[in-house]
Image 1 (cartoon, rainbow, N blue to C red):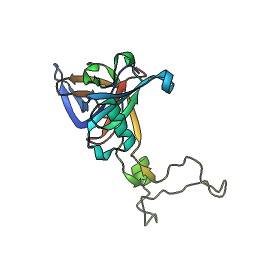
Image 2: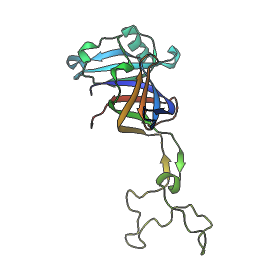
Image 3: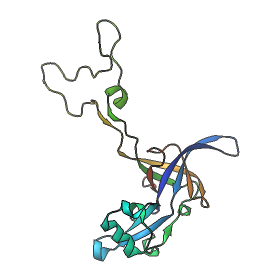
Image 4: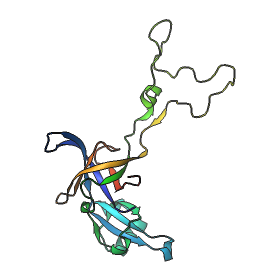
Length: 210
């Protein structure tokens, strides 16, 4: 992983190029992130940095996290995440990672948590068809329908698409293009949509499969 930063999804808008072509983009408030801890091969078995993002109150953190911030002598942060970065040696505890690490036309992977829809039926969860509205079908028309193959094998097959929890899971969208970087306002504009609702936490990393 070459470059990475934490951010907050602000919403979507559109950008016009010189030819008048419109590009839908997602606006992300990226950083600044503060290095809270450096993990080393001698002590932890691998090299990595723990970065903090977002402001919060001390009472919202437990004693272990408060001790980490106190040892690093940095302000308490809302989110903590660990990254393995190429410029590990250049980063020190207390230094900042800003959105300027990314440039226009960079390819990135964006990870976020999708919107939770609770317990959902087959039509919403799996885009299934509803049952017929006539010829004796009903009274429920949005039910699952047949689940198995009659008397043989007399059971429901594994991985059968059924109602259940929908959303609220970690999803990564790969190879998204950075359209614009506004270093003054800590904004990164990424082409297309990304997982999550507004104000949700996202992580932006260099594309692994570029």
